[in-house]
Amino acid sequence: MPTVEKRLAALGITLPQPVAPVANYVPFVRSGSLVHISGQISIDAEGGIKGVAGVDIDLETAIAAARLCGVNLIAQMKAAAEGNLARVVRVVKLGGFVQAGPNFFDIPKVVNGCSDLMVAAFGETGRHARSAVGVYRLPLNFAVEVDAVVEIA
Image (cartoon, rainbow, N blue to C red; front, side, top):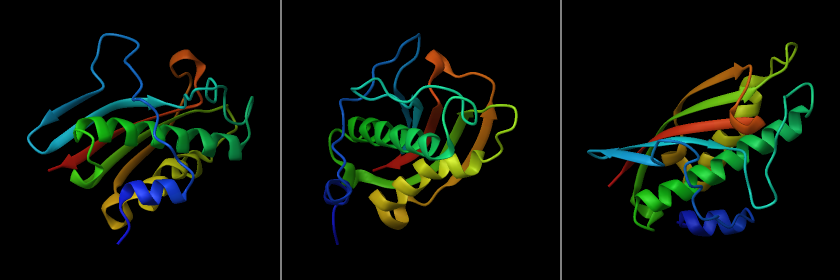
């Protein structure tokens, strides 16, 4: 069975350094075996994906933004698991927030960009409960933000 790292490599994904907090919070908090990961925005080394879905960016770009949030979540999971993604027992829940225009209703499709990545990377362990919410604004005008609860051994 392929490891998470091998699955990510097959998807062409190299994990970045975990994104540092931009305000007064920590990237994750562990309570027992559950790790609560702070919201990860759609940022990458090139600046990421910003804008309002249905106004500034289209559905496909918004889905890519959610996938980028997933990459950043996995980077935080790796940090929380002391570098060993095999310690991830379960992706328990994702909370997805999409900066959406007034006539954009494909919020669940956007957040699938992150959800699909979790399943592709972790297999059945990546299946999770989820919220998908359209919001007026997100920090620094990023298109998508996703937080997570993950069980780590």
